[in-house]
Image (cartoon, rainbow, N blue to C red):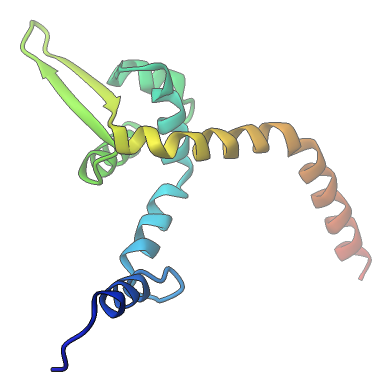
Length: 135
């Protein structure tokens, strides 16, 4: 194997994380963070640590199974921490890590964009559906 310069090694490393490639780890991460429950959880945790029940009540429609799976995956990815306090009953808090906080501005912007532009999207859908029905 030929010896590579530092510049060549950096170039190769950048190419290894090309999200357009099927097996790229960055692509798998994009899949994870584009999930609606991930977006809502990260936004909910922006206000600081919260308990499981608080998150469950705040995010309408999320099942217990989906909330648990999403929290575990975010903990595994290093985006949040789970802190267990030995009390009766046991207290479990979830909080964003610095890595999770670094993603927060993007997630807040997406949530804000969706809330701001939903009327335009609904109008476009209606126009499209009416147009498709005429064909």
